[in-house]
Length: 287
Image 1 (cartoon, rainbow, N blue to C red):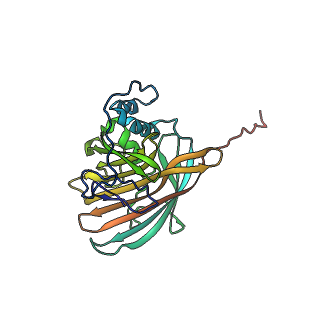
Image 2: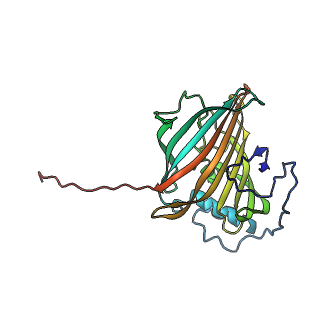
């Protein structure tokens, strides 16, 4: 279990890394490795200007530049579909036991870096047109929208290298991030349009994403939300005809309201497969 910036990472087959933020009271188990801040000699490998800009912040930021390419490059991922399950729970006030609300399932389509789209919504196995009025929090925006927002140039996210450590998948680099609510134009969900802070965990050599933790550092002062926390785990998923593709595999979202009540969603992604459409031309007999 990792605590960074006040956000508790839930045990979701998590990538455990022995690093904590400067905001955490927990002692660092793996010493931070010193790095130099020299600008890389070349950023020509980055096709996205924003990602090249991030990598040019220093040699330690090269993995983050690669993670940015994953988030923003339209050519990074082929089209694919995954089935998402969202187990929702709620409690009336802090300290109360979580009570199950329902289980939401949906088909999420990632289309060549253009974002994600949700179809075939079901609540407890029953098809529905939408989740409006269903009684739980709707967090169907984490598959790609939140990550993209973090790296978009318009968001003006501030990144800071936190350190390196040894995780379950080997050497891991950790980067803290923060962006203001005024610059959040793309990550919205109902009353939620936050300024976010958090940490990005990536392979120290390749920049392959492992985990993103975030919390709302700025909410609408006139709204009814008091807090927002999320964790998203990434891993390689085998997809027929595509090989192994990096995609979200699990996550969690917790929101609390000014009334004291809270909602919590546990997310999982499975059944990923290639997305494509077949078409054929049928001759017109009249011609």
